[in-house]
Every structure is written in C-alpha cells, then in structure tokens.
Length: 565
Image (cartoon, rainbow, N blue to C red; front, side, top):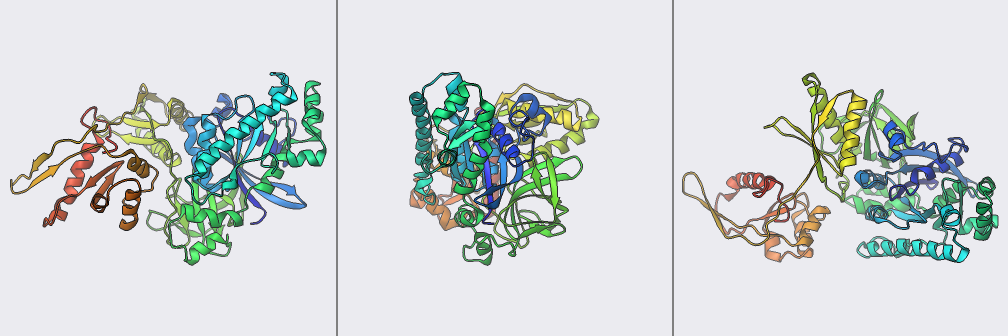
C-alpha cells in the first residue's frame, strides 16, 4: 500500500482534465502518444465524445516508475460541468489526492472553488497543475515577466481559496497550500504534451526561456520529448500525494463515526489487507453484459470473488460475482483487490452510491454530502404505454446510479417527475433513456424548483381532536441560517446520539432548553415539543409528525417544500 496513489483530476469545465488524463495514459503506455490529447480516452460514452464534455467520472489504473520503484496510480477523471458536481463529490470519497487543473488564461473560476471545497471537505490533499500555458506565449504574446506575474497570481488565488476553507477544518494541515518551490505546482500544455515543475526543471535543465523559444518556433515535438508532461505530473503524484497508509488514519475518523478503538477502526487505519473487508461504494454504473458494477474504495481487507458481504441499510448478504479494476471503458477482472485500492465489483445488487459494504455488520460511513440540491424538474412519459414498466425500472436505476437526481412518481396524475442539477443534467439523462434503453419518451418543459419559508413568527394556532377532549397549540417561525446550514451539511440529524445532537444545535446557535426538546427534523425544519408533563402524548406524536410532514412537503403558498422553519 505504500506504493499506491489514489487521485482525482478536478477542475472548472473545459480547463483540460480529460486531455491531461490522456497524456498520463500515454505516458503509462496505455494509449498511443500520437493520439493523446485528442483521443479523450476517459470520455467513454458516445454522448461525452459528441458534446466534448465529461459527464461521468471514469476510473483507470496505471503504473509509473518513480525513484526506481513502481507505483500503482488509481486515477479518476471527474466532470467539470456544474450539473455533474455530484460525481466529483463521490469521487473525492474514494481518493486521497486531488490534482486541481486551472487554465492559465482564465485563472481560478467558480467551479475551481467548488472542487477544492469538495476535496478539502473529504480530507483530500490538493496539488495544482496550470494548463494551457502555451496560450500565454502564442496567443497573448506575453514576455517572461508578465507570464510569471500571471502564473503567480493564479497560484495566489488558489492558495487563498485553500486557506479560507481550511480555517474551519481542524484536522486539515495548514501547509496544504501549493507552492512552486516545494514542487506541488506544475505548468504545461496538455494539448501539446509538455509540462514542467521546479523539480523537473532542475532535472532537465529546462527553464521558461527555453520553453518560450521552442514554443514560439513551433518546435513543440522537441518540447514534448525534452520535458514530457506525463513524467512531470506522475512524479508529482508519487512524491506529494499521500499513500493510503498515510491518508487513512487521517481520513477514517473524518468519514466514519464508529468506535475508534475497535479492531475494525484499527484495520482501516493500518490498511490491513488481512482484516475484515470494508468497502465504500462511490459509484454505480450499468454494464449491458455484467449488470450493475459498484466502484469504490477498499479501506481494509481484500475483496475476492464469491465473498458474501453485508450492505449497509439492507437485510441479508450480497455475493460478489467478480472483482476488477477499471481501465477507462474496459474492466479488467482480477483475482483479488487488497486494501488501499479503488476496485469495481459486480453482484452487489443492493448497493447504491454511498453504501458501506463489509464482511461484518458495522457502523456505516457518513453519507456522502452533496453540496447542491436538485433545482430543475421535468416530467417524463413513455410514448407507448407498453414501455411504462421498463421506464419505471430505468428511472429507479438512474436514481440508484446518480444520487443527485430525484425521481418522483406522482400517484394522482401518473406523471414521472425527474429533478436534477440543471437542464443539461436532465437532457443527458433523458437522452440516455432513449438511446441506451431504447424507450421513446416525451419530456415536458423544465420547471424551476421553488422552496417556501415563513418570514416571521406566527400567532398560536389551535387544533382540536375529533372527540373535543384534546387541544394542540402550534406556532411556526423561521430558523436561524446557521442551524439550517448545520442540518444541510449533516452536522445535525435525528440519527445522532441525543447528546451529540444537542451540542451540535447549541454550537449552531440554538438555546439550551430548546435543543433538549427537539422532537423531529424533517428536511431543514425542526419540531420542538414545548409541552410539560402531558400524559399519553407519545401515543399521538406519530400522527402529529405525519400531519406536520405533509404540511411541510406541500407548502401553503405554492405547494412547494417548506424549509428553514
């Protein structure tokens, strides 16, 4: 495990992640050098190649020799478009390092900030690669001084983002900022396959002056030969990203709330391949031949064919049919995959993205927190009634593969509503239902999802029971934003031990007495039971909650969900 590196490449849309992945694959001898940068080998689906964007995170495993030792690098190429941000969040759970790519001309963009936040929230160490440096030389005709200033300002922006985010995170080392001197920043051009970093310049004797001369004279092939991008980036990965043995002791307490003194916790922290199997599923994909493939991180134990494992939240066990590694679109089956790796298995029919799979029953990992909620909804109908059962099955499969999609089947109107992160997200999903499943579907106009919230404290409202013997009094008021944020980030929930929940609510600003009377949390709404010494209240409490949830799901203004009350 000391020679394994699990990394994700993340960036703003069109900053060159997939082109960079091509270079790394070519450097590892997995695709031809000539087509690297244009082949986009990690965009394995037809619609990705057509649209020229990455839609699904794709995994590949490769080897790289660094300081005479062969290292195994498990790489995930993630999408940059904001609509597919859920894939980035899930990928971060499986890796220990994030290679953040920034376009030299555009600089740090909104999505650069988002992917950095996603990485740091999962305890993943960032390094920086500044891509498209060739554009500064050939298009903007910048001199060495201007170029240096521009690159320095990009690095300063990224470091400012890292510092700002790491402030509130206790367990993230403060020295996670990137620096040229330490070798955690690389520069180059993924399209023309050259790259440099401080260590590589010292090794090859190339400096920016030589690069500008070769670039201006169109001698890009020589530039690539003298300082190939793949060596620079893969050396940086081997040297500066933590291996599982370094990373897991830090990451496990962050993503797992189980007993830290148990043998299970010890097995995960030591990356013990002989320990109990603990596998966290971060991605589910469909293969027409093999069925459902679950990809994720093996935290301890060794995955083997034929094992019977528990899947958190479901009864019984699932039997593993095959174990493999992803090579872009191809899946290589192997005998076993030990702890510290990213593996893909078939046969886990009950698993969804975010499931904990293990050989003993255990506290599951923290659920993967998606920062964004679905904001746009479309209705989907099958053109032919005969296709309806198949459509419902496909929609359930879609929801299983992508937790950022919400599927709702409206019993009253018979409509199927599909909600996602944006129009492109829903367009891609419906196109795949048509093309891959062969179901002709009609989609409605996209509608924006709204939310409702009370604006001030209400008067007291009286409710009387049918036999007139009991009266309830309810009031509703808006909740402090800090408490809403704490619920959304999963820092407060009804699944927590009561004491922990009270402390978390008080930290977010709720007063002590109120936090002791929390009866239920529904979405981002909290029900407080302020009654004193009333008998038999527990017997009716379930009905009160049911009525309340119904009222909160269909708000009074526009029948949209209520939040923050």
